[in-house]
Image 1 (cartoon, helix red, strand yellow):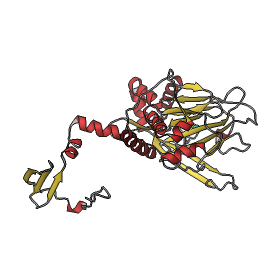
Image 2 (image 1 turned 135 degrees about the vertical axis):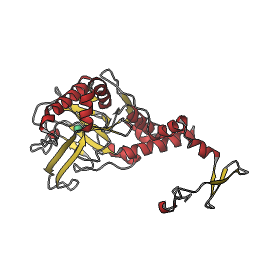
Image 3 (image 1 turned 90 degrees about the vertical axis):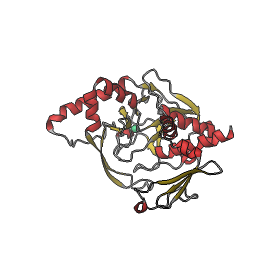
Image 4 (image 1 turned 180 degrees about the horizontal axis):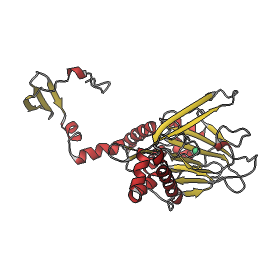
Length: 349
Ligand SMILES: [Fe+2]
């Protein structure tokens, strides 16, 4: 074991599966010493062993460092609000943001400066932004020849972003620099996890279909040739189920995006009707349990993109000044920062 690298240096081919314990003893410092039948010797500190005990308590403790428990919500949910400067300038603020995102999947940051890179400042405190072929940030504005329906005034149904990537972004920052002044342009949010669990309970066969039916998502297009921050042309295809479960059956990823769901179906023809019924049922659940609010200039909604869906109501006018900036961050980076900040903040207490 390399104590500096905190990693095993023993090669797997040298793992001896038949060595047994020759002698057990306790050292002067209270550590356990094991002499093995192959002449290898091990020392284990008592606390180290206790943390790794095969007890439910020890397992639970490790799991709570790994992930915080999620709290599901429905249409009566009040989104948590935090001040942008508090999050950017104070460890406690950033920690509150990351914990709330892990537990409920959505936070509204207020008093954000009108700089399109405002989300970068937060992402840079965590790690780095997650790059996609739309660049490190995407200006969602109405443009004459849109390569994505987001760049129009059309209503957008609740959806998860960038599902055409297998490695879809974990978190999305929706920064409202300039809101549409007329009717429309409201943000809708739904806890896709709540809807998935409702579906598992009420419609188990349809839930099973969504967890086992692979769906193609695709995105093909070209960026403005003058824009050097983006990939010039792209042709992404992903193939994943709408609801992805881990080995314990817990929901880990939700991919619901009807705008870029591909028209190729990798199904038997007699499964098509049930598949659409399952998709529609899931949509009705997220829609019925969603919340809606109109962001004002300087608001930034941060959403767990592999759990919650976001959308917007439509707005009219070919020249709306509405200007929203989207930026992404990977969950691995956010979880890593949450653990480090928890260590740091508990040391300072
Ligand atoms: Fe979106």
